[in-house]
Length: 244
Image 1: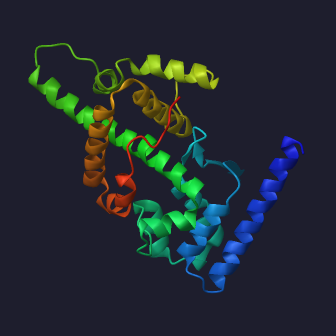
Image 2: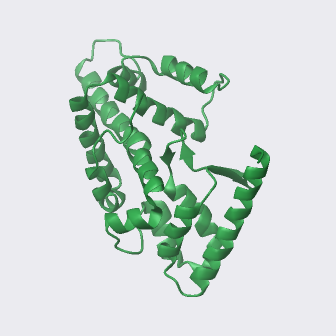
């Protein structure tokens, strides 16, 4: 079967899943349960709907399940209570108090592991940047007579030992992305995940574990509701990605 035929089959499967999801919720099934079960069966790593492109799988490994949840919730529409809908998408707060095992079972093992990749490789990597930038600002205020790099640039040097531009150029070369002066949100996520894997290659395990704790602490400060909801997931081993 050709790649085009496979893509067409997956698109048809996705449309049927949306129809089934709407029907299940209309028939009274708890919408969040139906949503997670639809996510478990969802076949498309990315798609374009109208003028918007959705990429659910970052770096081919990290699953942004809340982005897919947003897509599915839009399809279900007013069948989902507005407050519950907004609490999930804006704050990561589900309407049901599921255990981590129940969440894993409903989402499916493969997507759950990819979800953990996103937590560590994108969400916590972004939090780690904020942590280090905060440290850099404090250090720069105490070194008033010195010329400083920008906060962002010094943070990159501390985290990765190289400049942001050097790393971005290497990332784009490896991914076959054309050099431009701007970085889209989608590319920024891909770059963040690539940086996470770069750190795993070159940092010792003790520092990686320490960085995860510091990043999680920042997440709890900035997004306490989301951190509580994701708390059990962060008890997984830090090396959820096996980097060759």
